[in-house]
Image (cartoon, rainbow, N blue to C red; front, side):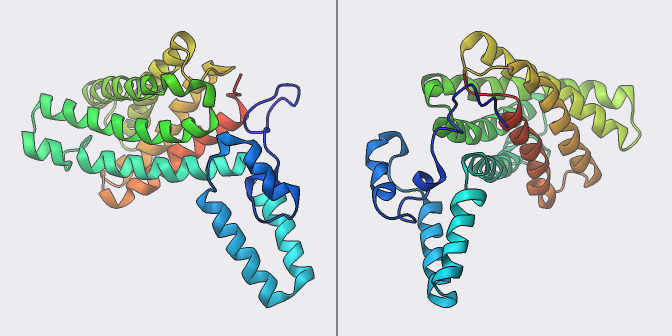
Length: 261
């Protein structure tokens, strides 16, 4: 995943401290010496409850086996980040899709299907998923917390530019499905990833190494997402699937390429 020679927030905590209460003795108490962990996470409580149920129903040995699996494999820091990234992105994209970005959004319907209304929908869409992503970054990039509002702003600007350029030029260049969706994804992903990369590179957002890889990762992610969106005729029912595709590509890219510095 990461360069082992470079400490980063994903390697910072052992699995035992990620699930306080699953281990006995000093492991559970060590959370007090890490104020950045805050109070127990919801998945810690779920893990504790799961371990308790397994221990009661399968016996001590089997319970210990599941305990090792939970702490050593399933809920390590990289998997936690990816899980939270996917969930928060799906929520953000669903809210953004309901507000705008398509003709079925609330803002275009309220303001009329005009260019200003579409731009307002794009702004709402970018703000929704940008804010959702910033929530995840807040936990895993603590040194960038003071600048995460710039990530939301970059998401708004990048998506709005990409959506307007894509809507204007993609159907002119090619109108055959699925190629129009692929081209639209390249335009949106390129604009969004480019603006966000600029925020990383010059404004100190995320403070990451190898930030340039975010641009191709964003392009691939949006090609996947827009191919699904165009294939479903922008149905609201497929928004979670679109968000899942985008979140998986970008989440894996963050884990593998974009190391906290």
